[in-house]
Length: 173
Ligand code: HEC
Image (cartoon, rainbow, N blue to C red; front, side):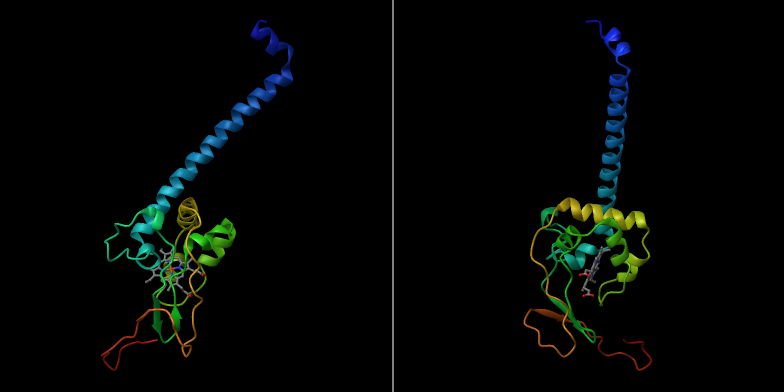
């Protein structure tokens, strides 16, 4: 059968075809936007230092750690006047969170030495890029221990993060 006659006789089919074409191009656009956001997130994770604390051995290896091992948290705590904190496993952390939950949580205060104010001051677009990137890595690893109070005994390894030899006028927390 002549295709043109078939299409003219069936306007609803034409509308459906048009709808299909439009929705696939919108989908392709959305996927490209996601790709760009994921790339930006990877870049931010590299240069904003997230791996320095949240990826095991990243500083020691000067960043030469396969992406499959990134951001799974580090079991060496940071101990200071605030107690003992552990860089969270971000791969598990974002797995059960939607974008709005991430934007809200990422901007709240966290314990030292997490530079939470860097997240607070990021644009929504950059925060979401990090979120998209971490989610693209997929959930992996184990959850890190909850932070311990200052007087709580610690069974994991930890760094002592205490300023020493301060001049008397120095600002401390
Ligand atoms: C100097 C070390 C350090 C750096 C750099 C760092 N983090 Fe953290 N991060 C931590 C520690 C320690 C915690 C745990 C804080 C707490 O218990 O409140 C944490 C917690 C978090 C949490 C909260 C997890 C939770 O369970 O609530 C998020 C989200 C996070 N970091 C994201 C990032 C991102 C994104 C970057 C890069 C822009 C980054 N961190 C850079 C050390 C760091």
